[in-house]
Image (cartoon, rainbow, N blue to C red; front, side):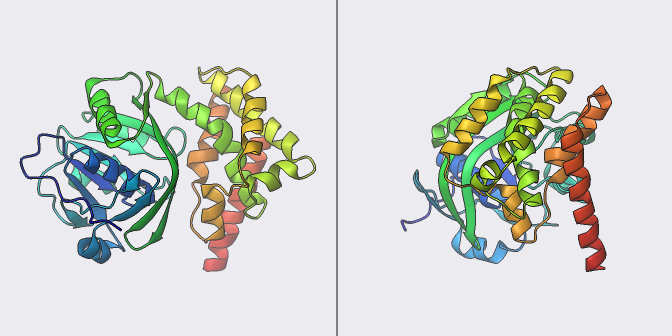
Length: 323
């Protein structure tokens, strides 16, 4: 492995970046911005000592993206200075107060960037920090953590990005340009909420269903008797809720999505992997919020609701067994 990228000089004229939630995804996008010349710092928990000693090691199809962050912080530290961009990459889970998590690191002019899964995930942050611009991003990437401070980037990395609740402002354009300088393609969108609905068309049916099926991959889901029909029914319900929420979509997207999924090698999605490894799943962000929006608009979603209630039963059972 080549020598990790050296920290940016103190006189760098590029915006400063702080990654909160520097796991595989946060570390990767931090590396891209580091390659673009930005000062990049990280907030670490369990991997603090490894990152201080060795930096973040990233093997990628883009080359060796390893780098030493400009600062490595623990929870409870005080930042040397408020960042220009704070990038939040933690999972959206019950009991995780994301607004409190980023409070110590924010300045009055810090732009908050969310690279996180799910629908309606911005509102909590927007209500807590109404004066700070919010940039919402969807990541299309294959990346995994392989050891303390060690990441393997498998494929992709494209971002879809827009201001929340809508629009593309100067802050958004600047950040997109930096990612482009670092080697990542960015699609800017005026309606980032609509883009989140599009991603829900795949995530909301496949991710929770994979857990109910014991961690099943995409081939198992689609090849099981009735499996493809169930995916079609779930996707149709998501489309109906999106339409009621103001984001209509063509029905032929269902055929295209299934055909595209069948072309993939058998794939275990992130929720399946979290389930198989005993980690909490992003149930509300991916499924619960869709059902809640359906209720607000009076849209019947019997398949989605059955899946949600069953998974909540499973989570309650786990809690009782743990106690």
